[in-house]
Image (cartoon, rainbow, N blue to C red):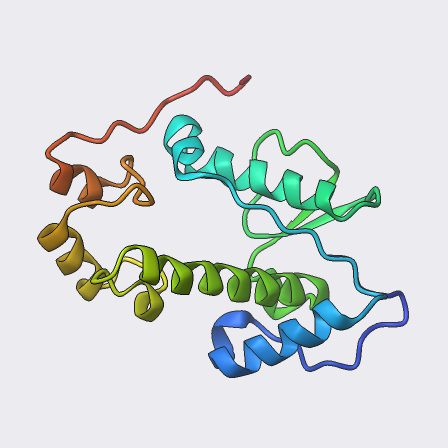
Length: 177
């Protein structure tokens, strides 16, 4: 996400500290603001299982940056340094608590992901996706063991592998790939 140089008049904050309603309101305002550049990307479950969650996260970030439609000089990334990040970046632990652009991006991403999970509830009823939003809550794990994994469950996530009766294998790739 690229915010206007003059800033924005929104009380953005760490998305985890905001209610769902507040996140949705802020995301709607950000999406409606022509001066705000937003890039979104989703990486498939199959891709996550293929390359691992860390590499898939990096891939999604790069795709989201490309989706901005404008080149960036520096990416601000919430979290620890990522090996071989393909762009100049500054990694900020708890960045969504101290950077308006990271907080705004986190809000838009969480609202987008939550909406995807609500839609998945209609495709896979009984799993509670609309409630737990895909997080490994007790209710989600209970539904997973009761109903079995769906195509949107990561096989490399140990509880999913256990319910599917397979030992999940997280690929270990050399650092250079």
